[in-house]
Image (cartoon, rainbow, N blue to C red; front, side, top):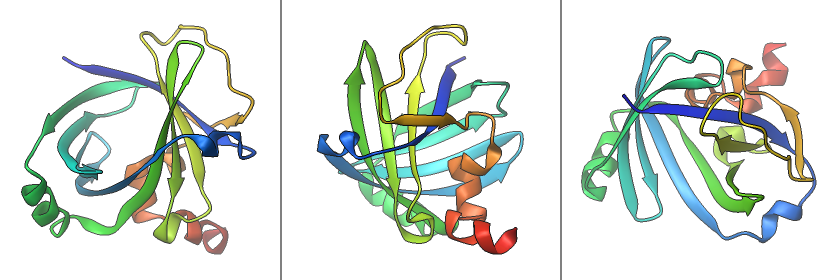
Length: 156
């Protein structure tokens, strides 16, 4: 079984903006607590991803490339709104940080993720990384689809 171990943080400042950005569009065919099924277009590539329930910073993850045309059609079947974002990949002290600058109904949200080989792996935070939000479910992309960042103030 493939396991994803990922930590998530809010982003501060602009030092991360120099990295090349790729446009992502993704949607969810299923957003149950026990599993999510995601369709993603990243630039000119497309993927179908199944993720299990989170346990700390870990969860099962299975990702498969699919034809771009199929992904475009599948996005039409996904729950709305779709997640739209620019992703930048930044190598920092041996780890690749993925910085997501959200668009659409999540405009204004910027989150950084780092995948780790184990939950107890130590790493150094880049200067532009702020508060950790790994266990805050509001920041899961699947939840940003049902309760976008733009609605958080209104819901409080």
